[in-house]
Length: 54
Image 1 (cartoon, rainbow, N blue to C red):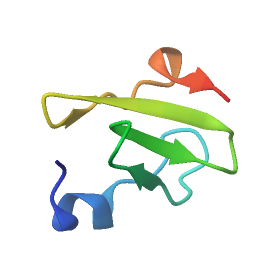
Image 2 (cartoon, helix red, strand yellow):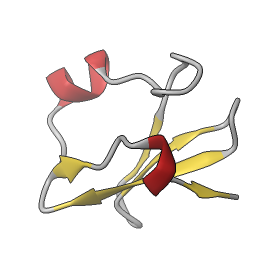
Image 3 (cartoon, rainbow, N blue to C red):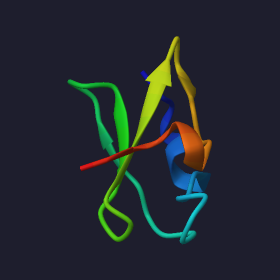
Image 4 (spheres, rainbow, N blue to C red):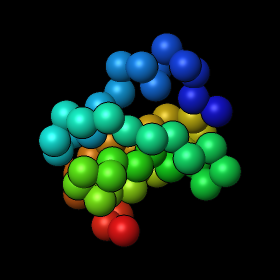
C-alpha cells in the first residue's frame, strides 16, 4: 500500500496530471492519458513505456 505522502506528490509522467490510486488492483490511473501504471512491492512503475492503455 502506498503512503498518503507519496500519493500527494506523484503525478502522471506523461501529462503531469493527477493520478487515482486503485488499491484493490494495485494501480495508479491517469484518466487524462487513459494510462494505468502498476505498483509492484509498494513501488510505482512510472515509466510511460511500461504503462498500459485502458
